[in-house]
Length: 186
Image (cartoon, rainbow, N blue to C red; front, side):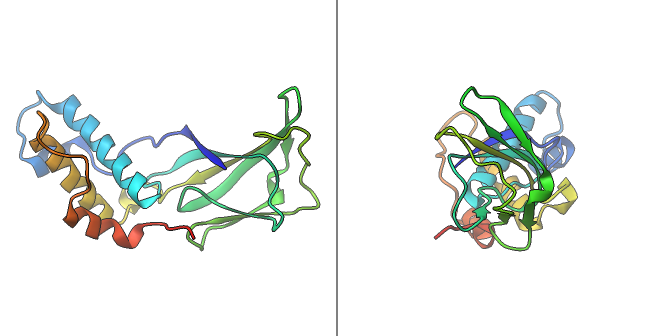
């Protein structure tokens, strides 16, 4: 199962002004750099937690329907299933009624159930099924405070070592902040 980002978040969990205040930067010369570091820190936290912090749209691609009529969401927290389609041999998409899908947003990872009797069966054997989902906590104000704190710490580290000398590992303090939010799969 592949997950493809279709629509990235519209903003970041931390504004440029909040970041500059945290870093104690009083000039505008590094604004573009700081903005890119905020985004990089968010992506790093998302990658380590397997969570989308802000609302974003993802496409799940499957070869065939699972036998148990349930698909674990590769991105958490699952908000809703937007739609789905099945591609035929020529690559043309047949849209499915979104009511076929049921989003279990309470579980972690979220689960996407479907009515096995109403889905279109794929003809081609590879990447035949596409399901579009919305994932994320919502707005910046909805992101849990420990994850925002982790972004701040990663940002400060990146800004301090922007000329090199740092490594790409998650520092211990940050790892402890994000550990309760990690989505693990068995």
